[in-house]
Amino acid sequence: MRKVLISSFDMEVGGVERSLISMLNNFDYSNNEVDLMLYSHTGDFMPMLNNRVNLLNEVKQYSTFRKSIGETIKQGNLTLGLARILSKFLAKINGKIKNLSEYGIYQMQLMWKYSLPFLSKLDKKYDVAISYLWPHYFVAEKVQAKRKIAWIHTDYSTIETDVDMDLKMWDKFDYIMAVSEECKNAFLKKYPSLKNKVNVMENITSPDFIREMASENIEENIKNDNSFKLVSVARLSHAKGIDNAVRALRVLHNRGLTNIKWYVVGYGGDEQMIRNLIKENDLEDSFILLGKKINPYPYICAGDIYVQPSRYEGKAVTVGEAQILGKPVVITNYATAKSQVRDNVDGYICELSVEGIANGIEKLYKNKNLRIKLWNNCKNTDYSNIYELDKLYKLFYL
Image (cartoon, rainbow, N blue to C red; front, side):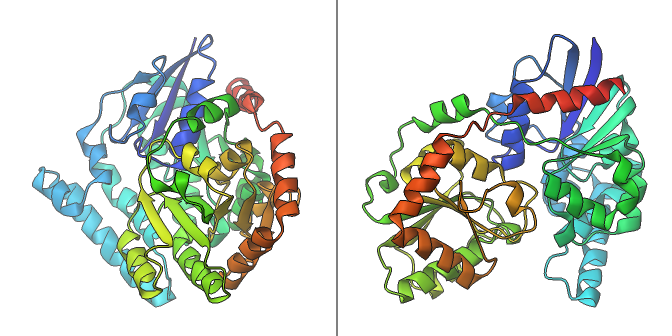
């Protein structure tokens, strides 16, 4: 039996976490003994973890990464708290110098850099260690394994990182798995020296499981709402573009399409900003934040169109899930969009702008035949891909 370690942050509700659950549910346990290291044993998806996985005990130091700086210091982790303060200060200065709208990724790099000396190692030795979510410093520096594999879930061409710092980390890995070909290409534009390490393995999807979950009854008004309903499932963050979604709905209403409502399943740090934007645009009754839902699939089913207004993605898990449920999909033309949707076949790719989102939605709203075409093509496509795991297993032997 191979000893395999998989690490990630926690099991909060999110696309990466759902893809991890799908991978664990379909893993080969006849040949692999799997340990799971979660930095924090928190999140609504914790009960969904496969019981064949050995969940390692939570380590107090690592659990602080999901806590505030104040809470970290109060709990006695002074050095880690000070490392976080220093990281935030330096990242903010760097952001101002470079005029960055988003510097959180760089801040996270610095947080790990300054925290590493105070973090413990795992004693157990593994045949394979998999770091499922960036930043990958834990597996790179604190785990002993014959082979190390890291995952890429995002479009690296759109985020600000310290390339030299990252390369030192990537050098500790034997292989890097990108969730799409476009995601791989974007990564290699930033890190061309890593070309021989990068492979592509799509997120594992389980259509039968998704369809079963979608049949669950929901109480919210969305089910009985006779409006033309748009649905998005997304973290409320800059990357996911929900602020642009609010502005796009305002454009649609200004065009007289006031029968359109937009429902968003999700939560995140930008919630108050988005609520203020909804109020400013007089859309309180039309742009509805449903909050965190463990099971988003009934909400996707209740909509007429699924919309992904992201600024960037690696490969959005929810887009594939909406296609499995036969929903017409509109996504913005982020760099990896064509890896998700065959334009005008099983989805529609619109321009990445407020006007572009509004135009794409209006096109499908007014063209019922196009919606039916997309629906039929989705229903007739097999989106299952458990065979993708074979790509991972092959790396175990190389």
